[in-house]
Amino acid sequence: MANHKSAEKRIRQNSKRRLANRYFGKTTRNLIRDFRAADKKADAQKSLPKVVSLLDKLAKRGNIHKNKASNLKSKLMKRIAGLKK
Image (cartoon, rainbow, N blue to C red; front, side, top):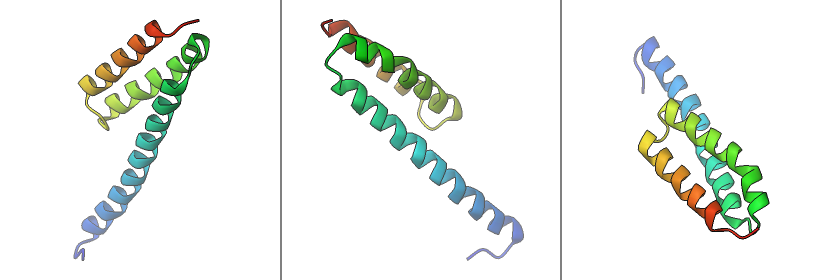
């Protein structure tokens, strides 16, 4: 239990941030899952900018490491290259 006002505030901030981080993480996982499920190249290319943008934002905020974001983007690009029209 928090004994100081600042500790109470810190608890409130942490819970809000935790919720936001969980939301962005789950949203990213869902977008990547949907991207990988795409069978056609056109569909995948259409959703790629949104996925890449979200990965960059997460890396910038520190939710995921910048190298993890790069590795994920690289794998997604390879996936597009391997798809048929």
